[in-house]
Length: 186
Image (cartoon, rainbow, N blue to C red; front, side, top):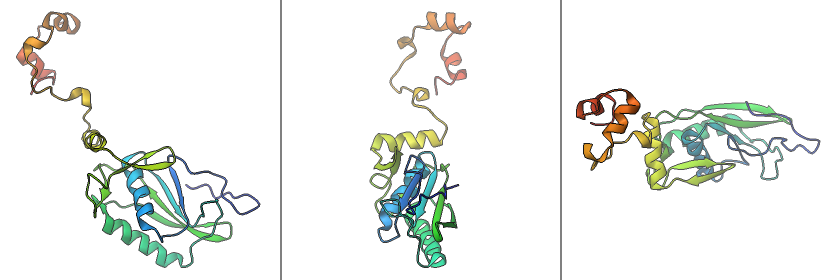
């Protein structure tokens, strides 16, 4: 939950971080959508609409309309479909929108209008960065529960392995069948 505390000047106390992003309004929807996508691809987080760059809580003028607009923007612009929780939250005598985004299970998430190769973002510190092609592939592998180390080396042969050493370490004979059983061969 977003920290609702503000200082005597009406500015938020919590700075932007790996899991928190502030936006004044929805006038630049691409920046908001980039943050939503980055959170879904990284560790989750909250996008708070109604906080200026200097941290001043300005609120949103028509909370219900803005809530619906944000929901529609995310639904229409992010692929695969993402369903964050969007709440109206009182803060410093104003109302802000808080979009809670969780780490998605169908990574990579991306901006539909530019596609997965140019529209995938990740969160690094308090900033959103476009993901490289390698990072997009890593997000796919991670979502499937695969690690790079478990990937099959397509050109490798049994003779490339030190089977005597593997047999000693694993306490069993190593041949093609054993490699298949161990998941090291497909």
